[in-house]
Length: 128
Image (tube, rainbow, N blue to C red; front, top):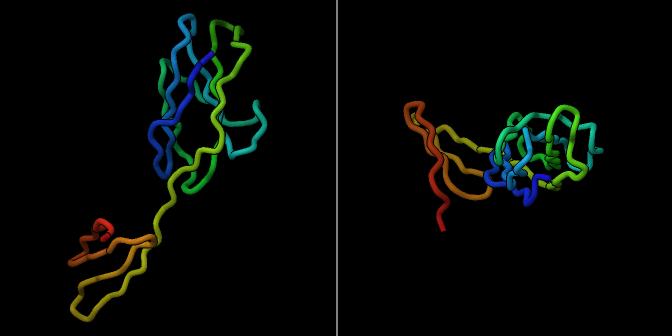
């Protein structure tokens, strides 16, 4: 069984998973879906080794992950590592005001400042 399943990096569209390798494993099946989905009904991807990044996820959405060890042709582990309730990052919303001198200023939800001049947009760190 893929033991000690944890998430490492979470972005708006991906979650990186890591687990301890089973010595006899040939590969792993990483199943994922919206939190609460029934095991066996999610999206399944194949992983080799002890880390895998699930991509193409929706921002601000909570997912469950199941990792099944595959030892050989039609020989699956009888236990599955489970990680539930992992949420991807939300996309911040911007409020932008255009001033008469063509400079753009605005705010970032949750703090910080958005500034743009001559079509260059940059998010500045949140001021404490």
